[in-house]
Length: 474
Ligand code: NAP
Image (cartoon, rainbow, N blue to C red; front, side, top):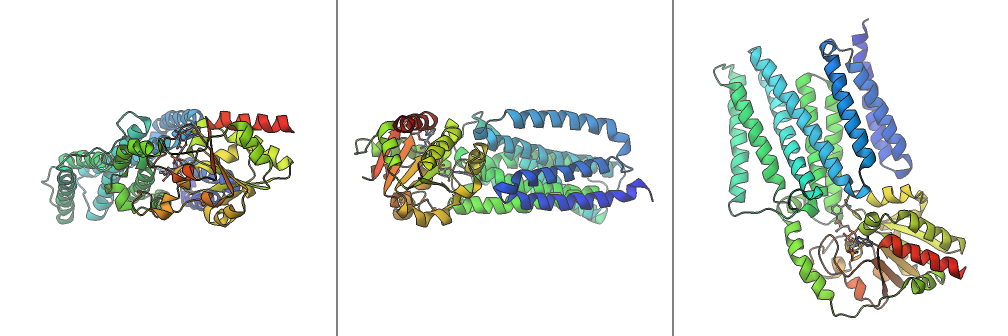
């Protein structure tokens, strides 16, 4: 028995760790451990791959690649701010898709050189190439939009559908020519020329697909592209005859698809609407109008002292965190506030909306960073019935996820989106900097509710001031 015969065993162990890792990621309490288990499995798989006969010659270049990628990935992940995480994911995801496409090109080059274009492998390699290239260029555009390098507005022009459809049709046609030549064993097609054209068209298709989508919808798009990358990697697995790539790619493809579905559902939008509905474009335009709509209407503004009094007389407080809490990095101040209230015998719970913030689990990660106990975090369905018993709902940098228009106004872009029933609380304190709208660019009638008091300011500073007031009163 050679060491090479043990490679499939190592791959099997790695595949099991990936599944255990994903299972661990399904709960905040086990997420870190799950991540470590899967990373350990990946390490086993990489080490095992070094012993494969066809890899041995390339060890130095692979090590160089691991060093460059490892350092860039480690430094990037360490330095990136939590609010910039979606674009970081876009970047990493694009790298995965691009890698699958490069593997496909090299495999084509090898097979064309050897004069052996067979139908089955050609189909798998072609899919790895096309899906990988679409994911690469699409992710690059998503990154550019989120990073502000490209305008985040939905980019539209009159013959857009024709152009995008034309690119897709041309890609399909050239792919069929390549597949037919592989099927009939015809050798006189310029295969590498066709592959170069297909690559360019797939890259163009990725750009054409993502450019018309508003920056606001990018997290959903990234999740979808993530699923594409998984598929591309699985296809590259077929090409290279590597079972682990097939398993890992399929897991990524499936989980990316499920996540995309969950995000669309939590925003009450179909995937088709995200891809072709230009929500971002509409909302950017309506943003100004929406904020103008609230101007001049009566709102109640309070200071930190009043907020502290209201909170200290409460028995049940529900904290509703949102994107603004992430921007302000107010999680530690919020934890301090909750500790203070709890020391006075006040119950404090956190209401977590599935799409609060800008990426799935955004609020969970932030609050975990401040060591907020997991058992104080409640999902929307669990916490909604409790709002009517809450003396104070403390909304910190959340907007759309609290907007009652989602329940009551059929004309609203977020109509039908499940929301946190903040308006049912006895008193509501909203901390934000201004009357400006949130992500969806629309008014929030919650701010006009007589039960609502607005505490204007940066979330971290405002919560800090409330903490000071509470301490003074103690
Ligand atoms: P939101 O509706 O975007 O509102 C965030 C609010 O935070 C803003 O109104 C802003 O008001 C305030 N804010 C910003 N910086 C602040 C600061 N430094 N201090 C205090 N407040 C600050 O956020 P959300 O309620 O969390 O809703 C999330 C939205 O993102 C939803 O529409 C959801 O559909 C969308 N989305 C989420 C995901 C996801 O995966 N989580 C993905 C795609 C889209 P001021 O400017 O007045 O301060």
